[in-house]
Length: 196
Image (cartoon, rainbow, N blue to C red):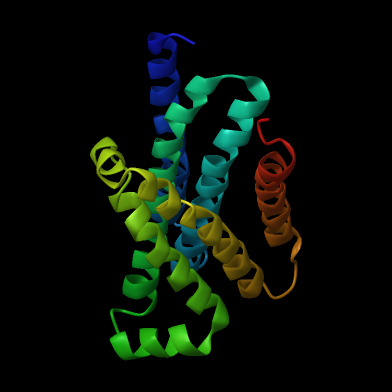
């Protein structure tokens, strides 16, 4: 894969990652959403999870296809996961709770799915802040250890969604199955395909 091809793929992927936001904005601004706040909250939460799973899919795809250049897409996908998580969190504290700190604290301690979502968001912050090349060089081996938190974030994100949904669990279970597959491949490669 040439640098020019990779640059084209990155540009296309960047635009594709913004399309869910453009679609959600259009639906809300055109008045098609019955409950705009709930729609924005659900949409940004869903796309946070999708971007997170796409980020986690890069390493298995690289190993299975042999295209090592795919690794250069992982940071952008991870940052888009953080971007949608920020929108999700902002929607909750601003449009849903109107910056009522007492209500937010009550929610965090009384509603398990809010607790998990809040924890996942907090864990994403250091990952986003240390995503630069300079931080990779500065942290060295600790960078890799820190960024393993993404697996915890993935599990918390799926549980957040699972505990939020009350009736049809098919969608959160599908995300859970994808996450289990992605983490299972990593465990398999680590335990059974160690280099001699």
